[in-house]
Amino acid sequence: MPHKMARKVLIVYAHQSTGSFNAAARDVAEIVLTTQGCKVVVSDLYAMKFKASATAEDITGEVKDAEHFRYGEETMLAWKEGRLSADITEEHRKLSDAELVIFQFPMYWFTVPAIMKGWMDRVLTLGFAYTSEKRYSQGIFKDKKAMLSFTTGSPESMFSANGINGDMNVTLWPLQNGILHYCGFQVLAPQIFWAPPHISSEARESMLEAWQIRLQGLLGEIPLTFTPSDSFDGGQGFQLKEDVQQKQAANEFGLSVGIHLGKPLPPNSQIKAGV
Image (tube, rainbow, N blue to C red; front, top):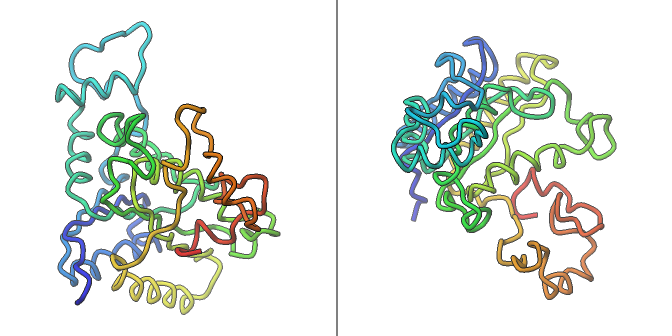
């Protein structure tokens, strides 16, 4: 029985140029997924002039405590009362509808561009996207999938465990664990386009073809592995439970990039599923 494709996909896209490789990667995703019967919506952040800074202007009407303004608490209250700014409310609607979210961007300074970080800061609202009770594997978006698709300026060798930029798995941990998985998303392996400006046009075409092929089975992929929330003891400062630690004692590798238990990192755990 063929895997049922997601009906709605959101592509959050951050590049200034329609002639860019990122634009081409976005177009390929839109075409392939639409052909498969998905409804694809694109949030083109630069074209939208999306506001990146998280401020009191994101709230309509009075704030609760103007003197000591706390963005998380104030926006959660505004969300509950339907007083968030129209641009955030619109992105909430798109995100609520989506079964898959693809973030398409050029890597800036080992992370997402500011405009995309602003989307994350402003749209992943406390209450709507996460709470202290509903996060990680118990997260609000645990029935949704998300992934990063991005270009780098450096070749793959520079992002290896003995390369000058360091291990790409370490670079991706804050984004994939600390943002996507934090909100509950099942995180699909990233699509990394290594240094497109520094390769031939034929090699760039091959990269897009590989993305096109991957997209055809994307929704059937198993997500990356993260340690389940119930492995941690809330009464002990959310430390790994004793019995879980004991089970891991004989393992050569730590559980993940961040929860490494002082052991070698599991190889490629933020780049390949099932490892």
